[in-house]
Amino acid sequence: MPETHINELHQSKSWASLEDRVVIITGAAGVIGRTLCLGLARAGARIVAADLVEPESVVEEIEAQGGRGVAVQVDITEPDATESLADQAIDRFGRIDVLVNNAGFFRAASRGGFADIPLEEWDQAFRVNVRGSWLCSRAVLPAMRRQGSGRIIHVGSNTVFRGVPGFLHYVTSKSALTGMTRAMASELGPDGISVNLLCPDFIPDPDLLAAQPGNNERLVAQRCFKRTQEPEDLVGGVLFLAGPGSDFVTGQSLVVNGGAYFL
Image 1 (tube, rainbow, N blue to C red):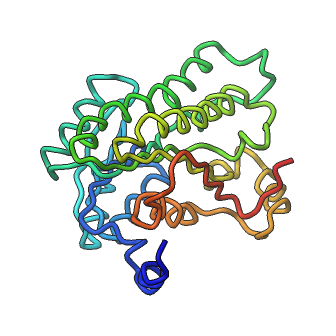
Image 2: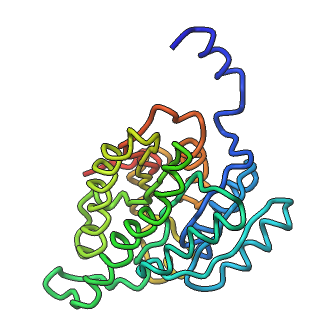
C-alpha cells in the first residue's frame, strides 16, 4: 500500500464510518443485538432490526438518537421469512451493505453431559445458529452481488476455542460457523463480498449471573483485562468488519474476549 494512502487512512476516521450503509442485524431485540443496532446507527448506518419478537422498540431507540431504522419481525429458520427480510430492507433503503448474523440459540440451551442433551435442543441449536445464518446469508446474496460488494459477519463464540464442556450442542453449532465463514469467503470473494466471524466471550446480564453463579468471576480471572465483558465491547469489532477499514479482510475470526486464555 502506498505510504500516502496509509497516512490518509490513519488521519481519517472513515474506517469507522458506516454513513448511509444499510445494515441488517438479526437478534436485534436481545442485549447484544440492541447494542449493535444503536452503536452502528451512531456511526451513520441505516439499521434493519430483525428479530422474532419486538424489534420495534429497538428502532424507536435508534430514531430517538437521530438515526434511521426499520423493524422486521422474522423467524430466521424459515426460508420465506428470510427472503422477506431481504426484500423489506431493499424496499425501505434500496440496498443491503452488511448482514450481521447475531441471532442465536443460547439462553434456552440446557447445560449438562453431552449424552443427556435432548434431541430437540440439539436440532434447535443447529436450526438457529447454523441454518439461520445460512438462510439469512443466502437471502441477502442477490442484492450484494448486484452491488458488487457486501459484508457478512457471523457471530460465533469463544466457547469454541475453549472447548467448553457441558454445552456441546451450542459449542458444536458455533464451531460450524468457522467452516461456514471460510468456505463462504472463498466462494464470495470474486463478488467483492467479505465474510468474517466475530467471537465474543461470556457477556452476562442479571439473569445469566443468577443462573450461573461464580461463572463470570472465573472467566474474568482468566483474562488479560480483569473485568466483565459488556455488549458495548463488540461494537468496535463490528464497525471494523463492516466498514472500509477491513476492505482486504475476509475469512477471518476476530476474537473479542479481553485476552482470555484459550486453555
